[in-house]
Length: 438
Image (tube, one colour):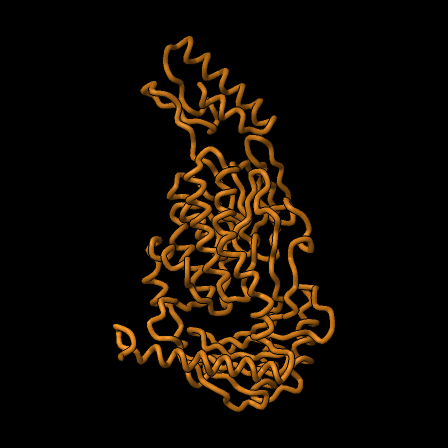
């Protein structure tokens, strides 16, 4: 009976009245017949055990908004810790394309425990070196990848697909839908969708990226938490023959502008990263303005810039977005918690996906450790992840300045640092396994 009372406390007022009617019927049948009635009398809120050993509570249900990286990873771990995850994604399917990302640091042991590391290694890009070019397109230096690195570079689409395959057997995935409203009470959250019927969940997770809908609905407008880093990013896929060497990433830098050709795995990618000369481009849906901005910004850049800009202009929907960081005083409110870039974006460092995977594992682990007390679980997860996030966010300004220097002097300094790193990598790769010789 205490379990039934606990169940009742979790319900909304309307659901509570329906529950009370079902419970009264259940007790009446049991009292007058001496038998435990069918569990349908409780309308799915509890399951009666026919051998009269008691009542078994259903698994807590968790809504995860976002099926990119953090969402499927969290669904995988929640299912293994006794939860029923439902992942809702506004796109019609898993997204294809996207930049190459590096699975590294705290994400590597997570991938290994999920059993997906061999798949990621099979899908790894063939990138083995970085060639830096000056504004005229002349080679400045070539940096080989450090030998023995445990990191794995894959495309974002491949990582998302692998995570989805790992989670889909134990989680419900709903595409082409999103959340429009949410009402919390002491027992759970009633969630309203654009297409689906309203549903009630025990917990809700916003894993829907920098422009998070869940964060806006529960915490406030985006402008309160998202700060521009002064840079914009734009990408467009290229034809396979756009690269001569699939193992080489090529980067041209001019003051305030960077242009990269990444060989990726199957589809090369042109990446434009720049400081805008004028304040604008906050309209995420204005593709014409995005194309105009890229064309104007790279109009005087040489090398293959005209060809790559033309590819950007010809594409029906090329990617464009400000590079931003997300800083929030708290990652949870009531029964809602944020995960990945929705809580603390660090994407400029190239480890946003790795932090999303590590965060998903940490959140599921802390909820399992504090079962029945989501507030403590949320707090423990946030404390644990902030130790990883804070130093990364402190480095963002410096990384932005080094990545896209604003002056030729800055380019010289950055390239000098690159030469020093390349020399250190070469020396390390030549050392015997036991270290330096005497």
